[in-house]
Amino acid sequence: MKLKTGDKVVVIAGKDKGKEGKIVAVDKKNNRVMVEGVNMVSRHTKPNAQHQQGGIIKKEAFIHASNVMYVHNGKPTRLGAMIQNGKKVRVAKKTGEVID
Image (cartoon, rainbow, N blue to C red; front, side, top):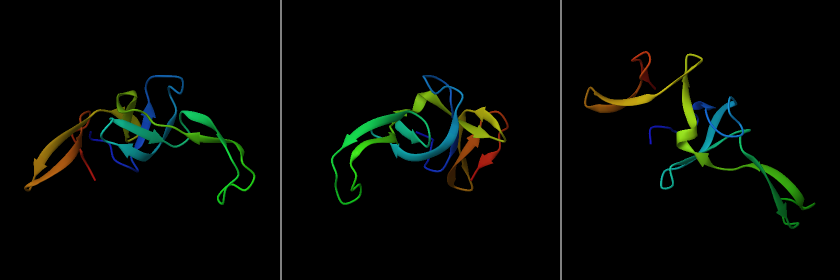
């Protein structure tokens, strides 16, 4: 998986298609990412130390990495990998530019 925490992505499939956000968490084992403000689910929680009130809490859930696309210079692009100066770097396929 070439996506990392903090990358800006756009959702390209599913109920939240077209929404943009930053990646909050990555699950490499299951090939899933959590994007802020996307795939909001309701969780019924009991009162505890963090949430004294309890009740229904809205939070993000993981979505499959194939349903998001990296945003580079305001446009979605695929990512590739390249070795530069003996180090592996990510490359935007549309422009060929090295990303961080």
